[in-house]
Length: 188
Image (cartoon, rainbow, N blue to C red; front, side):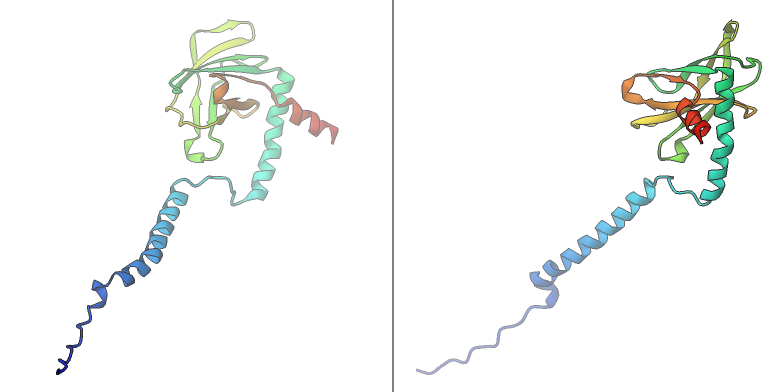
């Protein structure tokens, strides 16, 4: 018997083999995941870091004067936000001038771009009695979040009342001077 010489087997081209593709799949998936993570971080970034923390600290100290003034004047406010979260009725009481313009400030806890400052409009028959007045506000619908910081202030920057509004606890928030903060600063 004569042996028939075997023909050498033709090797496939590398890109027709499954192993190189299987080995490259891991790094390619990691690159796409990194790009997607960067996109998510960039589009959902929180405005929590200040460029000039010293200046902001000095500004906070100046703002305490406004809380003290609201405390002296016994100013309180109740903000009733509609279910669509795009309008509010504001009742303000205390020793303030109802003829002065007032602002409603809605601050998102993490995104400064969602903050809104709205000029309050006196309601028809705006003065309820003596030192109480009723106002209306219309604003862009509020994005969903766990809580908001709500502030009512005079446009002249003399006083302010504010508090945290927990959305899950209803659409009403009572604003009063920050007594805890004021008592801590008086003790120092």
